[in-house]
Length: 269
Image 1: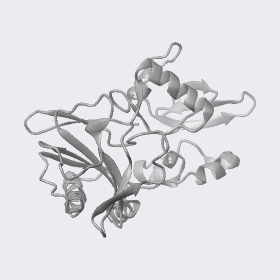
Image 2: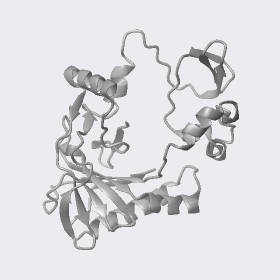
Image 3: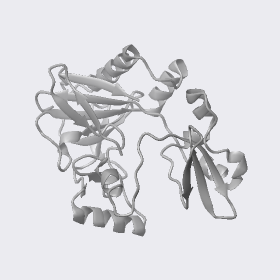
């Protein structure tokens, strides 16, 4: 649920929803929470039609299969939801703290958390992790440290985590001076492309700036997996990200939709 703030060479500030472009709610309890967020003004439904573009026929086709499901966004940014939650009464927030160890205390029915420096961070009834990689060997491959949670100690949780699907993705953030006049859709998926999976016109979302034509493109998992196979999971140098950005943009131009050069172009993993 992230928003990314970027600055152009001439000092212009741009904001992109480079991560999750929207979210849905099907669980009744979650729907009630979303309804409350809507009433408080930091969540709104994104009502644009969701269709597909076929690279083979070079045409837009019918609605995507999940097009009937309501899609919501944070106002004015996706992370507005998190900002509102941490401001709730009774919520204590700590930033810049890394968790180095999680232990389940069976007798107390709670989690004990220690920081990277060994300091005890407290006991908690529940823990929310943003990425299942923090519990896998991939965590060690990237950080050189053991995962915060030893899944051998919680086998039932280990089996559930393995069932959670994870697909890699690169996001391309683009800003144009003028509207892309040959694109009638504000959000659509790509068919028959090994490089691009979806495109989103960020400025069409409720509460977003329309000062420039800002788009976010997502790569296919296949494309991202090929890149990661060559580069590994470490932070990528700027030159590599520039190369990825150009490859994704070239595929966007291959749609034949008269896509001009943007004044801002940046890739993010």
